[in-house]
Length: 291
Image (cartoon, rainbow, N blue to C red):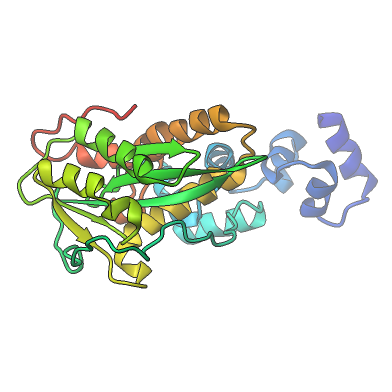
């Protein structure tokens, strides 16, 4: 590699470092590190290396989340400098397409008022939010139901199925009920979909002492936290993968939810820490891990 760099430099074939790196498919930091030319020394070389290492694991991090991750690693860097380097190295993440609605609110089942709207949440297990989305496999669609704690944004229940029905949502709810400590006043919020309005689902909530809340008709902003999580899941896992079958999708999504999202990914709304780390600050924290 050093010989190739030397030849490229001596030939004068490239007008600048960027052109040479593009032609040789090299990061700018590698050019500077191996070139041995002090005159070309990049003052950002160490920071570039650290950013590129983080980007290898978290390719969808924007510059704000990248700056926060650097800070967690003991690297102090101005966010404008991080933005510039990420732009120069083409490391800024790209957002993708919207996804379709997956719930049917045209039913004759009882719906409940929106109690989550305007609710002040200052601790865990005060408000749970839930949602369903689709995931494309090579030859079919499958569906994912999740439940999040609104305070920590932690995934506390999930279920994957080939059918978008009540058992799908119940699977996620049963997981959440099995690992969380139900506190008086806990509210469960969802849209008005039949999966959440079914008698079987609402009876589970009532028997657990959980108050039911549902979004207003035609107002997706009422369930914004769950919608935001689904976008994160799509952009940072689903759109970057091509699942061959249900088994592979289950394994990859399970890893993302438990390891990446809950334990590693920095969340901007909770001070750029992972959800599990955020929850650990509350007195009496002893929450088991979802499986």
